[in-house]
Length: 257
Image (cartoon, rainbow, N blue to C red; front, side):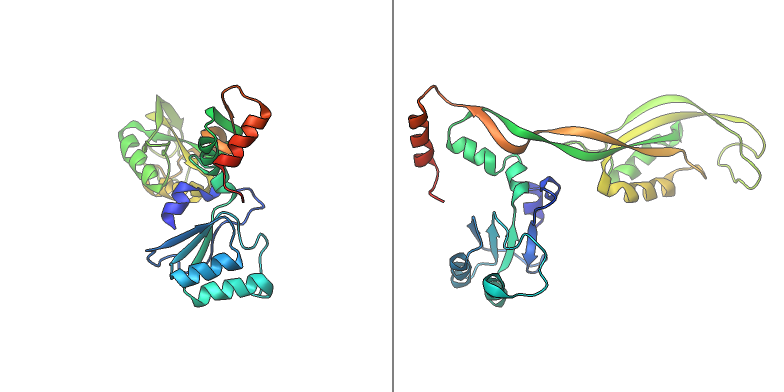
């Protein structure tokens, strides 16, 4: 399941879509897989007869939540469950992924200069925190382990700017630097790292546990990043030809589904 989520990230799916594992043990070993566009009764029977561990489909069995296994779809689910076949689907997340369903279609049609019809943006945050220069590298390591600073094929990505922090500890404070009632100036670095919004709480907890200050100054800011090559649909070019010729190309290149 981890491999499938890496190929087709769940975050790419439309909000209305139903994706992922419908039923089955997510920890079970998968030794055989049957692929299909739709989870039909015929496909379910084939998966049962072949004894596969996983049925991987493009379209979901259900788009809406279910409370009972009734009707034709319920019988199909029961057949797969009794046979020990897990059901997993990647729908709009596979459409948007790169490479994904639309890239495969574009390649089958021989399209060149392919770009997404609709691009996808990441739901990311930027963490900004001020830390004494001597503690900067240790804090970067801690935040990276918590999920911050990953950009594509790189990790531990951060940007720092040197500066001077000033503060006055009040009564009741237990300052790491300075004395209560006295204004202090400390060489600090402004540290910035990006992170998925879903990792915010883990990163904040790691920051508070590792930062040397009793009350570290930090904030999260929403940022938008376009994911290159990822999105719904594909637009490309083909050699100059008539519409009838292109229709013939489509008919010969794609299966009749």
